[in-house]
Image 1 (cartoon, rainbow, N blue to C red):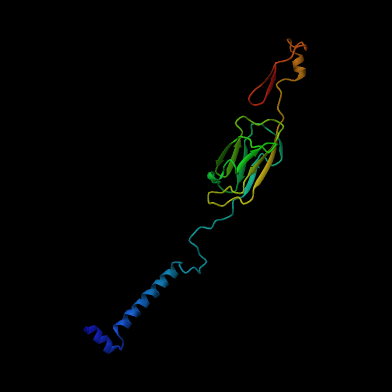
Image 2 (cartoon, rainbow, N blue to C red; image 1 turned 180 degrees about the vertical axis):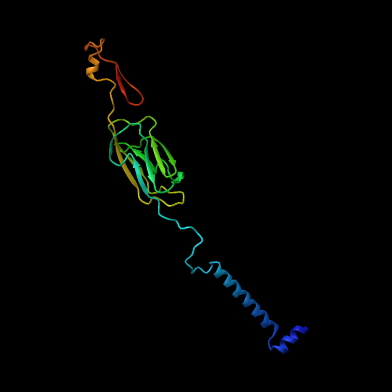
Length: 192
């Protein structure tokens, strides 16, 4: 035995093993106090992670739901209360449907909190369309829309380049020949 052990055994009445166990208990208590001070106890109300805030919500559309006489080359836009995660917007989660429920080929774009739909060739006139947005569309924090959104609009009637009255006033129009009818890629019709 060393002198220290002899002195502690004789003077204080306890052994070195007891002193070592007391030191270990003191260290464990100190660690528990430090963890509780750092928020590791789990009982406090303060949190170091940011709160998620409100869920993703549909805000508005352009044109508004049920609008008629919409220009055939209009870009449909859906706006949300938060920035939309582009990866959540797919061909199945954001669709433009025709009157028969058929999917219309469109270019879909995401810019901040807006989703835009553009038909590259324009849309036929005087036709009802429905835009469907799936509940799976998410914001940049991962919060989903939760409920599907559906909006409708109707395009304006196609315009004619000339009326029958204008046709009869042309000097070469005799009324006995059939006019030549041409349509451009936007669906505008011209009679010559």
